[in-house]
Length: 141
Image (cartoon, one colour):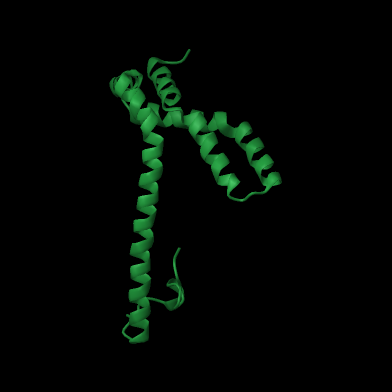
């Protein structure tokens, strides 16, 4: 029989829509390739392995969260505020991910530009092997 903490973790995973979100995100990634065969293969693989992924999620919540915290989270996500957040959260996460990715790209591009400048000025520290750095002219996207 499952212990109370595990049941709470399972409830939380259900409230968070983890199964549905993972399937949706995977489907969106596959659409980018626009290949029917790949889509079929990925869908099949997701269907075959999603239960084990959800078990791993539950295991992680059970390992890292106290029973008290899990109870509080379940209570929160069942509340009107929690339900509203569940509607807003995925869109917010996606937008924050885009913002974070754009920031990371800009930081990396600045570093590549500085590297290229230093290479042109022959002031690059010789302890950094050129093979470790992107070739001159690299544009990150």
